[in-house]
Length: 164
Image (cartoon, rainbow, N blue to C red; front, side, top):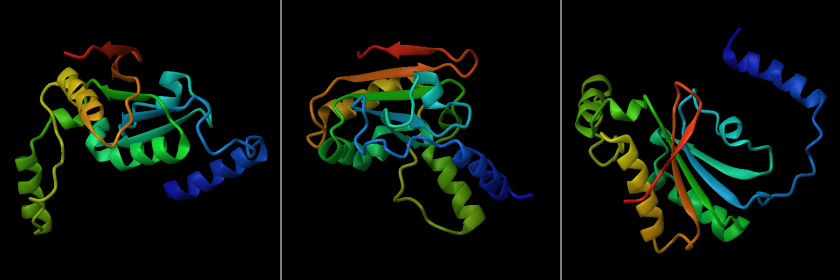
């Protein structure tokens, strides 16, 4: 059975007991969470979120520059007034450079992706600090509380990253 078929079966079970169809469009806790797409990180479980609580924006590395469009929509149209950034230990973004992935794509797919910034990083805590700064410095993002964390995939714990 394909994974899609498994998802369809799981959804049928979910629908059978679904009771949250009346949740409002804006997130109730007025927060946008930017987190890595890593399968070992479940932002809802890690942060104690329920459906309707928050916007959870995920991408490779949990990079804010990649999520900026979503953050703007979240704030301007749906009223979020806080941002939380979550990167994590043992992240794949620590394992390559832009040059390495571009070379791989050129060799395997015969495509030039020099125009794409893949946003890898070499220092985990600094990547969180950089993303906090990017949010705070952006004229497109409201002046709201911004908090950054590193999630430890080994323990499940979040560690607050202080700005430098």
